[in-house]
Image 1: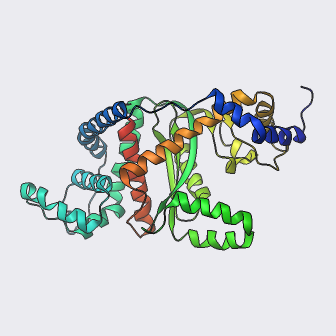
Image 2 (image 1 turned 120 degrees about the vertical axis):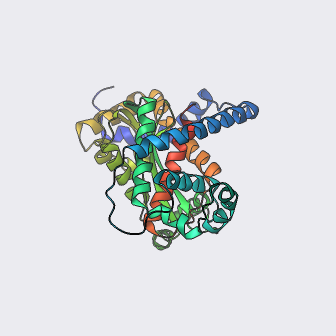
Image 3 (image 1 turned 90 degrees about the vertical axis):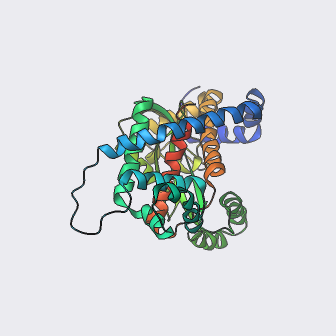
Length: 338
């Protein structure tokens, strides 16, 4: 192939839409899941996570030293508060319901905890510091120092009446009919969903970094990238949704980036963008094999929502962020031993 032009990108996109995707699907059929084996593996992962949790929390908390001012002391230790928050997030019950469930534990511990106490855990800075330490510990113990990643976003409903996946598809369908109406609906959507963007290590299926936002998936992405910048992990390759098909996003990563360009994409941009587009055009099937590993992100979100629910019970923005951080942590705990 001679000198490449922006026209070659548009031509290749047309080929993908016409027949290459079908050719790729035929060459990469989906494997049927053995549900009996899957359930056994899942049960083992849950059992391992529960056994790890107590010593991990103790290790995460042991590095925290806080000078306390005079005042009313905490009823529960920091370790107990962290356990309480994570367990509450796992059972996906309302604060009042979980408070009632704690009556069983109160028979042993003689500690009574109200639903308000549980709710305040989501805005307890000491608890969230320990949760963050837990995340770092898990990555260190797994030995993740360099990574091939995939990144994607999803939404969690703030109301029992709306499911994110079905609502997002409805917005796409409406956008094809009326741009103005779609924009109006998008503005309203922000009040219905909290957004999460997770960056997953493909080898371990664990989240290296994640971010959440009440504004948009893009804002959640920015927060995830901010978290990633503070992680001691080198990125070898990255896969992103077409929404991020822009030289600005490609340049954010040190290694190769696999992304499907938008319809109006051109060669204008950095040398890295040009190299990415060249590989997309000239080595399309190999490129798609790398890009379609993004499906692991979708599978990860699906598993998270199956385990922890697709809704968020909290109402304050900071507590919603905390709830989604706990979701990311549980994801890593359940994937640590896979």
